[in-house]
Length: 497
Image (tube, rainbow, N blue to C red; front, top):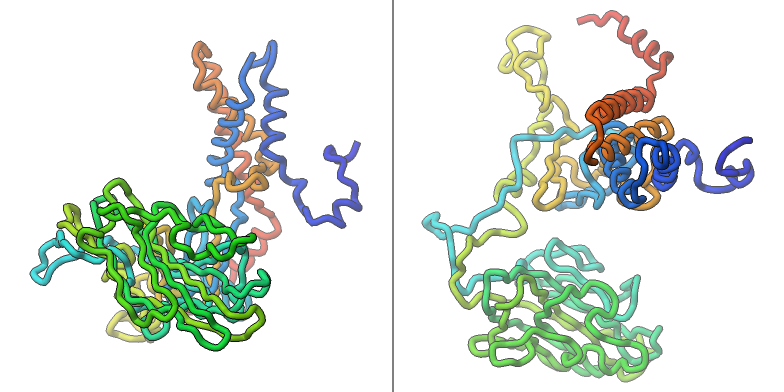
């Protein structure tokens, strides 16, 4: 009869789905459960497939946590921020390590002596602040710089309109001398004398505010050789601008409308005007404002987005000329006294001190030092969690990031983690060594939630579920007698002190 899925040797070895026969899909588990357990004269006379699907997914989650082998991992080069974003299907970690030039993992150890608490803003006397005219934006003066040419940080994010998967090429969005600058060239693929339209934005929480005031200093490129001039627009919207054409722009046949402020659904000011500022070609370090009667009404919003758009017009389509638009000194403040505590949304003094300090594990002290241990050749008084030089980490659940000690900066960091196996359709599969455990999990979940089921039936399936789960753990533990024997041979060596 051979393999039940009719896979030939040729299709297997010339394909790319190696080793998948050891798994069976969740869909097959549901179908086979219905065949074996549901029907006339069977334990479950009638049940909807949707109900089986629910209990099957719950069983898959539970078994993924501590029975199935975790095969998911990620690696990144740790940036200067010393932070790694948790994967979207992350449930828990099994190991965090960094990799040396030989590809060998060096385990990192969790530290329980620090964290990243919420930092409350206080006045000079230490009192909690409930300020008026307080900055709403983070890094609104662009005193911090970020990656070039892509401009992305914890608070400001950039993008482009009407083109997906765009490569900036010779264009650049960067912080130069404390200003956010847009350096732009002709975008020849449109066969037009226009640049791409770039934007930078930041999401802000206005749930406790009624109105906010806005001002900024902008510079739009003046006319020059082959350059008609630049246009810079800044304002507030109530929707996430991420993605293509979400600002209602169209690049098809009417490029003249791009960066036209009237094409965007802006928030309204108190006097019912569109809440945006615009700098036309030739504007040089010009400050524009929306304050007092023109303050922006946010009373009906919880979150809004501040967005900056930039474009340049050229006099000819075939030119290597470029132009620069820039913006600085953005001031976005609340107009009334806050009635909630003001907090720093990005960092805390605790975290700043931890990441800037030289870790204690970098101090590789002599184990013969009598200050720490009194007996010769004895390592007494040493805390084992600090007896390593690899580095340490902790997980900030609030921000969804892993924070590392400074000695791990620039290293290739690997995160081995547990998922609930429901992230994608491809992950929703069960190892065949645990297939029977899945059936018992589903059966017990169904009979234990139904009325008029005899208690002895419920208890029988409960015992069977535990027994099959235990058997699956033993099977998946992959214990090999030869490997254990080899380890025990090493244990029999006499260690001289």
